[in-house]
Image (tube, rainbow, N blue to C red; front, top):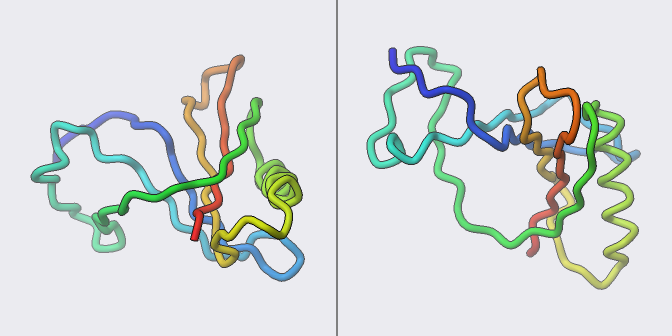
Length: 117
């Protein structure tokens, strides 16, 4: 019952399959604004969960435009290639992040994050 407005980034946890495409299983995460973090409102929909994301170190790449699934998959592949075999990071998931509202036509920011092990 409390309006919190849009937060950024909107983060989608992607679970790649063997070929690099995304499985149908995704998890969308929204940041709770600072003023609500100590005591967040209780969701009225049981499919919505409040989780605390622990601090992490990430490898990241940024790109512009209206991001689609294929863009995130392609940039994840580029980031994987740039990191090579020396970097240790989680291979079972990665984060796809968007920072802009849908009506922003220019200067859009998107990122792919790999979590360092």
